[in-house]
Length: 413
Image 1 (cartoon, rainbow, N blue to C red):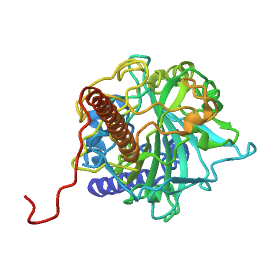
Image 2 (cartoon, rainbow, N blue to C red):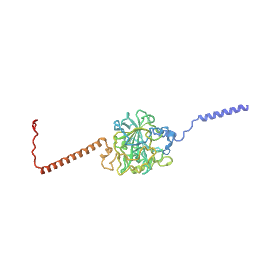
Image 3 (tube, rainbow, N blue to C red):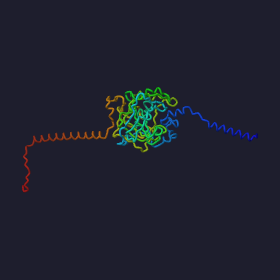
Image 4 (cartoon, rainbow, N blue to C red):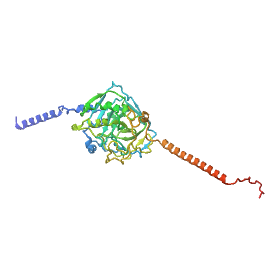
């Protein structure tokens, strides 16, 4: 065989070998399939790795994170608009039986509790019901760095709970997540209180069993609504986004006006137990505040004046930190809230927990008119008393006078 022909045959064999190697099935990277399954329905875990340390780079990896409808935001109570359409929220199927277990997972960013879709959210001006998908928490890192995502009048709370729902118009969370209005999230602020919050303890007691990233355990069913404030009537509403990548701008946010109290020990359990990347503690897992870009914030109640918490200024949890996109000056927080399972530690009366502290317009007007009426009545009584005393003095010092009627005769002189 001639050398040129042998060279062509060898070259063809090499090409065939390369083609076979390229077409052969390649093994998946360890954990790829498992991650896809485990992260179903969890925002921000499918496309690329991210962390709270690289927030400035989120937009380069996830374009939605640079949009004009991003969350979280600062709620300036002086600029919100009352909406009569924001009716009380209705939660159905939240009271789960103990035999129905729920998956609790450390996903490397937070603690996440999976929820059954039979739990539904309606009312509140929503055109259709929303089905539950999961809930998770955000927290800070010690007394000096509280960790709520949203702020109110510049005040940041110790933590924040998010209960995530997706529209019943869609078959799954994944399908709804990228569609306008596809998601609805209930958010409530966590505040340090004097007593242990038992509904939260039902979750927190399992944290030591899921200390490392990816670990999962089962939690017995309970009344999930007890993790939220009592008052479902008073809340803020705005259009925003997921606060983690991919930052889809499809969320109807509902932020409760009333807070929920946890003990300092419970807040510390959140801040010190779980570990994320490189076995570091998961701390300060909240996104920085985003600009409003002209968006409106609605409220289901009238907000007329700011209320300072008992004992002083706006930094009960250890101080507020100004941020590049805070959108407002640090000032007063929301009225205090209370855990659903016990008495209000500041008042000792369970009934007082159900009364909102923000005053309605009618309350203010009633107080003003009542004060005006009382002042007018006192002034009138004083005038009558003074006139009677003066008349008595004149009667004692002047002689009696005889008065006659004026004549009606037109010729009278």
